[in-house]
Image (tube, rainbow, N blue to C red; front, side):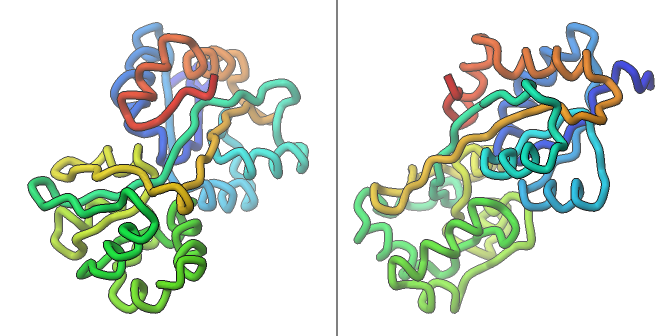
Length: 232
């Protein structure tokens, strides 16, 4: 593997569906090579703090702000890639509960046999902070299925939970589930994912070409098909 042409990236899980379906094949069809480590933004931040230096990082905008402040990012390379919303899923074929209003959303969460969410992912961190604000933390957490990281909807397929919450795009990656819809107004929060080249990138030119693929007009449909919205 030619290291000068291989783009080493660390990417948040929210974009995996769009990447696997379209963006990675498109980049590789043009001669590019990718080596991607997938993980929650918090895990990627931890790897970088330990000294990891990929060519490209794709993380939540707040995390990218910190990386820029620390001087890790190549100036002028940051680009907004896509926007994401949180949603609810059930196992394929299961009844779709009501989540269209805040009260219905709360009733669905408290009435579930178990709600699956992620401890390390941005969606899980947000959900954990949302529960006390909704006044249902004790009721939900008493029977929640909390995973360290990864895709929460796998717990629907295994039967360990009957409700999964996460970024809609992350829910859609898992076969055998159905997305009920987004959180209702009053519980929803839109997040932006950004990509940038690190100062110590070993393949900066290939990294620039990769970022151009992520932000090209042709990428917009890939984001929408995977439950995301293009950033522009």
